[in-house]
Amino acid sequence: MALFATMEQVTGQEFRLRSFRLRGDRMTKAQSEALSAHWNRFEIPLQGIINPKELFPSLNPKEVVFEIGSGMGEATSQIAANNPDTGYVAVEVHRPGIGALIIRAENLGVRNLKIINGDIFEVLTKHVNDHSIDAFHIFFPDPWPKRKQHKRRLLQPSFIQILASKLKSGGRINIATDWYPYAQEIEKNFSANSEFRGGVIPRPIWRPLTKFESKGITKEHVVTDFQYVRN
Ligand SMILES: C[S@@+](CC[C@H](N)C(=O)[O-])C[C@H]1O[C@@H](n2cnc3c(N)ncnc32)[C@H](O)[C@@H]1O
Image (cartoon, rainbow, N blue to C red; front, side, top):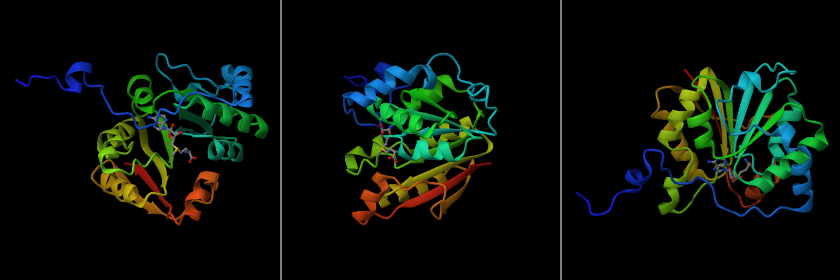
């Protein structure tokens, strides 16, 4: 028997490397004021089972889309404002980003958005029933470019299987990345999962061009968009 236990043995099956950077929680005054003023209207508390159908009772949305890693909320807020008959759930670990998203959503008068401050892995594995989500948006997931960091990438086979189990049949995943080696890995990992069909698509016109993406383009990063549909 090995002298030292592995991390999985110590912490149980749920041990998983973080897919996000710990960047600290320092906020601007405007972000912290936005959180104090409006968080209770946007927040989905991380307790019990989250039923997407019940999140927007006065709206009765045609579908509910979960966005993984909404960052500073630029795309999230614009997409929600442009599609008022769809419900959006932004999942983000970084609180200053959530403050920024709330400022943008308030400025645009968005009413079809809820936010979860948490790790998507925990959200999906503990708080969402199987086959209950219509679609996921995953825009510019952290690329973890160094070889020894690749295991921190979000879109690895085990997480793709979790996405498959949470989507309804016919549910969609839209992904964009400006890191070509990650794009190649995403394509390989989805092709290996028989529950999905799809692949590279032209840039969807509904996906706003954000500052983050523009910066990548000026560095001559090629942006790849994907759409996968759950069988
Ligand atoms: C590179 S940023 C992109 C943000 C945004 N989608 C955009 O296009 O500007 C990736 C974001 O995903 C978030 N993130 C990474 N792993 C996450 C996880 N497991 N759960 C929730 N958010 C996560 C990070 O905190 C970060 O804000």
